[in-house]
Image (cartoon, rainbow over all chains, first blue to last red):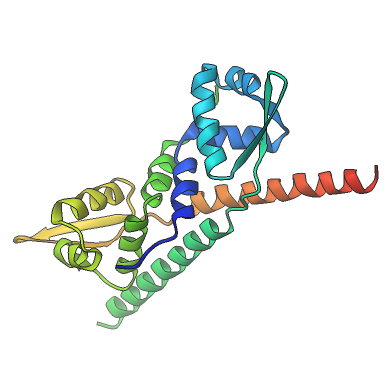
Length: 107
Length: 107
């Protein structure tokens, strides 16, 4: 049985929630504290912290605590492998459907 | 609070498991029955069925039952929006780091 890289698990899993994608979209515009994010998304601090923790584990977000304020910013993860996996999938799906198309046209 | 499209939830969630990505990679090479997949991945039929069901719900796989055999093939989902989301994220992350770089260079 082939082993598949675990990092893709954590990133795709992190991206599978609308609030987490929303947090990333928010952080593209600039850093934000946990409280800012809780306000923006109408969630409790505890709820937002859980989402941020998942994004941190996937290296999509990094946080720094100064005094009582934890500031979130975009992490180092570039999602290159994730995009490459999807692009390869698309290409192979297209190829399969093209071959099926040729087969149906010529039969 | 902004509403985010649910379809991205189901596709990214489906892609967040190595066995499910493996099933898609296997199906790119040709259709396979549930038993074929169970053999390939060293899993029980029940275990594979659960993964296939999640892939089916995300429209990444379609299945057809003829007699007692359920055959799996690639679904209609092209993952265009998923790739676009990631590409947009990468672009904006790059832009932010470029701006930070300029700022640090000029300060």
